[in-house]
Amino acid sequence: MAVLNGMLVRSAAGGLNNPYLTGAMHDFAVDYWPPHEALVGARPRGTLSSDWPVEANGRAISGSKARSYSDDYYHRIHVRPQELALGNVASVQTTPIYVWNAFLVAKTLASIDGTDEGLIASGQAEPPLLFPALKERIWQLSVTPDGQPVLDTRVVWNFGGGIGAAVRVTANRIIAWSFAPNWGDSVIERLSAATDILQSETNVEQRRSLRTVPRREFQAQMIAVERERQLLDLSLFGWGARTWAMPIWPDVQLLRVAASAGESRINCDTQYLDFRVGGMAMLRGESAFTHEVVQVQSIDGTGLTLGRPLQQTWGIGSRLYPARAAQLTAQPQLTRLTDTVSTAEVNFLLMELTDWPAVMPASSYRGWPVLEQRPDESQDLTHSFERLIRALDGGMSLPLNTDLAGRAFPVIGWRWLGMGRAERAAFRSLIMALNGQQAAVWVPTHADDLTLLSTISDAGVTLDIASIGYTRFGQLKPGRRDIRIELVDGTVFYRRIINSTETSTETERLAIDLALGRQVEPDQVARICWMTLARSNSDVVELEHITDSEGLASSSLTFKGVRDDEF
Image 1: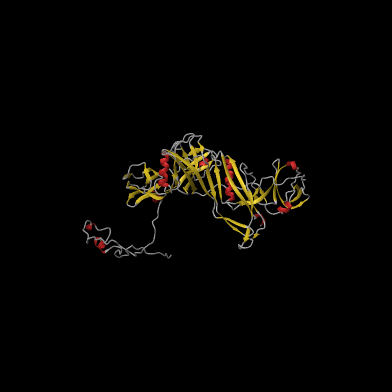
Image 2: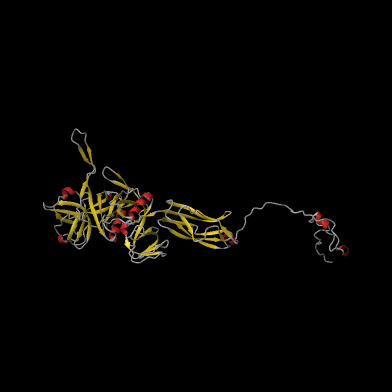
């Protein structure tokens, strides 16, 4: 007979009273199921009592609540944008603020806090204000120029009970300098570098710039009449130490296309003008009372795209300027011509880094650029020679003078006169590249320094010139050994003199380091002049704007010879 393995199935109680029933439940219950018909409807043998809570093997469990998509968007107050970084604020700037009640029940706005520093929230009824469930409302948040110069605050929509949302607002409040200069006098633009020069006894220099870029200042004469005179007086009285949005007066232009309120575009000229992405521009009407400062978001060849829409409409002929943050370097002195007319000379220092591109001349010689532009000779130009002379003088005998470097260093006057925006922009780029006294450049005299007497062959390396004492005095020293040969057809050669002799009382022969590569007759030569490797002799350069940027401007520089090419 087969043997089958198995197990006896027993009830949960195992033949005993159920151990999971409390005593009260056991007393209340009958002893068997289903009950006998005779016991149906019988009263229980005991009274049911509560034994809760029932605890079995209790222990602490660490965990965290799992969040869902619903928790990210609902059961809170949303606001956008959450931050307004307005930069320089020179006129009222208005931004829409969207507040959404994402609770599934209605909430009441109790207050709007933080609007006491020249901030105005408008567009909705005053609190308390009921927000139905899932309701969004829009406020217009306006930031005015009135208030603390530096604004960093939070505007809070407070719903009570710790519920709310905030917008952080940061801005630099500046005031628009809307007064126009008197163009009867020039507007002066001043670029000031700072160069530390370490000089040896033989005039070998180590030069380093102490500023990232030159500082930039503007000086102009103002004239104010009647109401503008009163406005000028009170503006200087109240805000003379504040930061101003100063228009770059020489870069003025008149709008040829009208710009309407609400638009974010101004069609205008931008090439060679001082507009900057992230910077400011100013629109001005016929008086200082009519103006608007706008933020420049992007620049292209046909105009400006603005960060915020225009607040006013500007017709054809309105003035448009680039604008920069600036402060007065000194409080102006007002001169009262009559009881309704005052004048003042103002000097502004730009409080922004000068980001004008630095560009050296394209021509080069021996690794340094060559200043090819001829100086303006409408005024007399000067040059001299500087020496490092050390005097030993006891006061009783004759002094002993020693030339430490044993050579002269040319000091060359150079004047620039330019017409139009392109020439003005190129000259400013040159000043930025020179960076005060730091950078060196070859400076030709552009004078008739050498006179050629005979033909130079295409392979010739000698020049016969009219005797000028070069062999005796020039002695192949820096400052008088490099020449610029300019032909009538505009061709230019740069060469170095490596030897010289006197062939007669009327002629000297100069040997140059490289042949010209073409035959040159004396009558083909327009000019042969000296070239000196030099730096600016001053850290400060003034650019005189005689008229606006489409007109005339001038400047003067002085160059001093250096020994950079010898080391």
